Length: 138
Image (tube, rainbow, N blue to C red; front, top):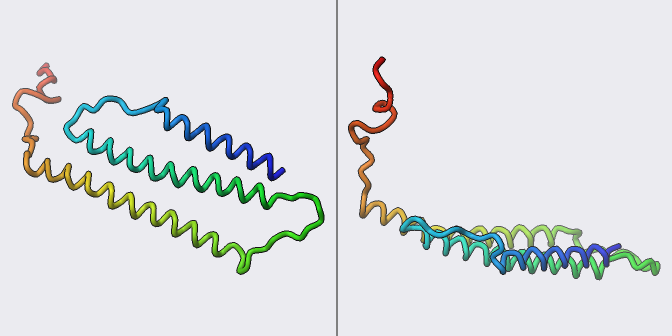
């Protein structure tokens, strides 16, 4: 049963990765000055998350394939110290990814805020426009 799960997991990983690589559903055209920066940051996020996704899913498939019940009477392998090491490694991996993506994303948002501060937009309402202008005095 472990081998079947490993094969199905590998197929799901390959198909879902192919959908993203082939850009089946992708972003629409940029309509703002900041669009290319945000799109680049999104692409960096997708690539780093995608690589970690593929590596972790394939590692899981290999682990399940190797650890599956072969019905040959061998003892179940127990990790020294239990699963604590695996849980700690998973937390460190996810934490490192979040930290890296925070630094990558911060440069985009700093650039965007800097552009807004250099070229402020007048947000005061224009006289004769807005919801109050559309109400007729009856």
